[in-house]
Length: 497
Length: 116
Image (cartoon, rainbow over the protein chains, first blue to last red):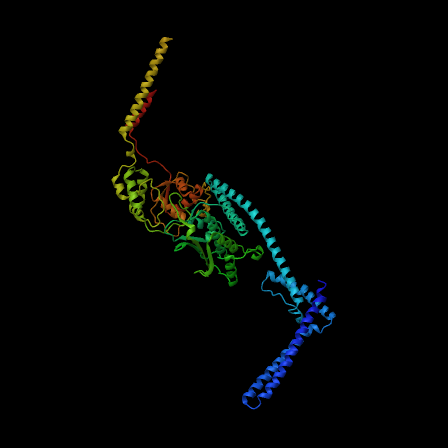
């Protein structure tokens, strides 16, 4: 570095001097040619115009020559000491203004990095070398930032994984207790415990995913409704979410995409509920089937997003470049970044750029066809808390019901009693009403008015008095015979001894 | 590959906000039956499902809980609310009272005495 201030200006000065000489020669030549043209074209008007043009060209050339002189020869005319002083000043400018500006620029892109301070040094080797130094510093800063961030992410991944596993164990324990104990007070506590653990689990899991971990749980193929209901249960304020299903068939999601989808929907719901004030309309979630897959629509009546937030969300959701935790801000806005990670890995599409019908945000999760499947409702029934399918009345159900009615003529008194108590008309009405046709229990036949008239003596007919008398009689006579036998053998023993 | 054990996806607390039943007359064996009142959309999914389940005939509370895969404590609270809104009727499982035939009873008594 010590040689630069001395050697470099000199080299530059020589180059500039050469350039100036060339410029002067050119200028003289042009002047001569202009004089010739002046002599030749004196009579005609055309010549006058030509002369004017030539004069103009000459003047322009002169001006250019002068400019070259002042610019190029500026450094050349300086003494070595002056040059040294200028370069020192420039280096001072680098350390005092340009380097700090660069550091700020790397954090906030809108902050510009100033160029060289001394115009006489612009585009010289000094400037280029200083630029190179700046670039190297920038590279070091960026590399270090990435390395530190990766280290932090690795630590977080590791920690969240173990906490997540423990939370799942707590979840199992709570669930076991819920099924063991009926006491309302205990159940209330368990309920709260379960909710809190579920919220914990979501945050831990999302943090892990943000840092590049997998969602941490493999599930079996699951109903889309179950996944959304599951996601709903993971957020605080889940009561302010209303899920409806527009699906006609039991649409399911293949095993590998179940947990990622639940995480995505949970994050979006958390956002929606967070921005929806209490006491206003609930967050609307609806499930739809579309030509190329299925959609989960989340409409919130909240405050909506600013352009800046929208832009940030779109950037995080597309997630092209590697993610740095330091870019998420403080407090970190991790939700969209987490979703972005999963979207990239599993091929979902998430958009939040449309306003909802209620003034808030409409988030749409699109699940491609290859991640969907049709579920078997008999082997894997949908949870009772999930939204029921909206499908037309099924024709196959009625004949089957009639069949069982013929096969099982058994009538319990309880069934008949409830039927007569509730009024037969309404029961028959609900019989035909199969708008929400969930799997039904078929142990007992449905009670209709007609059946009641047919069976006037229920329950009692189950035990036949004749048969009962026979059974008891046989038992009695058998016992009596046994007693008699025992008595006779006792007597025999008594006579022998 | 063996399928992974199924971890619940939808927790039971989603069914209700409170597990404090509004009445203390319900136990595991309480018999529930639908009153035939139509379900409306303002009922939660689980309540609609519960009423739906009972349209096929009466069931014990424990049985309802098993079919919905929910803890009994939770179903009890749900059922209490539905009984309050007269969607369901609940009663203890008392067998139907009948006048027994005195002759039969005498015959049984006689038979039992003669066993001795």
